Length: 371
Ligand SMILES: Cc1cc2nc3c(=O)[nH]c(=O)nc-3n(C[C@H](O)[C@H](O)[C@H](O)COP(=O)(O)OP(=O)(O)OC[C@H]3O[C@@H](n4cnc5c(N)ncnc54)[C@H](O)[C@@H]3O)c2cc1C
Image (cartoon, rainbow, N blue to C red; front, side):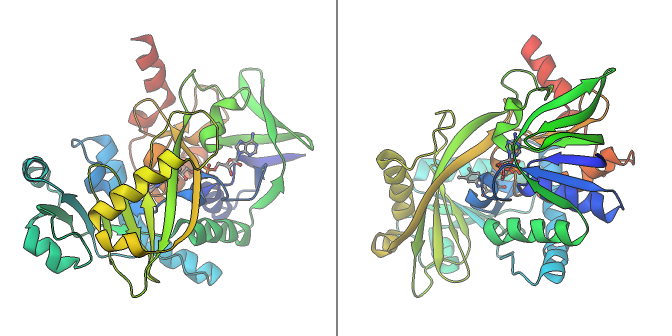
């Protein structure tokens, strides 16, 4: 059986690319070994914050901003297509300082960000407390990124799957063992159910992408980095917006739940919530907002970021005709979903991509390995 496009993996990347390709009239088959969206995509905090991630201006920062700009329209599109509420919330992001030294570092960073045209405000302790009264009175100040947002990754993942399905993409359960190359092209995948031919194959298998035989990814191009999360319940609601410190973050949901995250652990594919991991995320949450100490723990979990060596995603054509990547999104995969969908779909359709994809090519990782 031959398809226009086979997508490997039904996390947010696989579903979003499938949605755009199905909307373009392609016959799309998505192969998922488990439940769509059940891995990293449902485990994420859902922070949509280019400002906190911004180290310096450049292609990655531009990519994050282009993706954030697409979010309001994507959230509306998904809610209209599925009747699900994806929890897209504005209100901005706070990056708080717990001591004077950190406050000075943040102020210097704000100056650099402002020079690069990024909307950011410096708040002192009183202004921070006025904006978020549930935060610690000991905070020395904060950077406020007013244009930033968050989304609830579980309904978001589910909505992407339903929208892709509704647009005509088909989903099949089972593991892809191998991408088949013939005559210098990727022509098919070997799936649990047999060989499935395709004109184009999109590898979107998250942290497991490099384990698919024939992926063409250089060694170490995508590796798992475990993150642990604790979900707390606050009633009445304690916080309104995402708050970062230099050790982690808290993400409030509209209903009062507060997600506390997250660790960055190099432990391979060992999916576990550990005493040390929980202790770390809860300690930082309570440091930021002391009243969280009284909040019941509703749930804990861990999952794997698909981490690339430089933290940038691997997007677009591979070095093998017929094979495309939508992987390696590291800690910003939810933020980067809308632009990934549009850019990778454009590459498959041989249309001009909405952003220059060369900084995110697999070749940059090969060049990095050679150095
Ligand atoms: C704890 C944590 C917190 C995070 N917080 C944020 C955040 O706040 N903001 C943000 O932007 N990002 C965040 N991220 C990162 C984000 O979750 C990921 O970058 C993103 O979800 C990756 O999406 P994906 O579709 O590539 O991967 P996944 O969601 O992992 O999907 C990959 C899919 O491929 C399937 N698969 C794998 N191998 C095969 C195979 N051989 N055959 C068939 N199917 C296969 C898997 O079963 C899986 O469903 C966080 C991640 C973690 C772990």
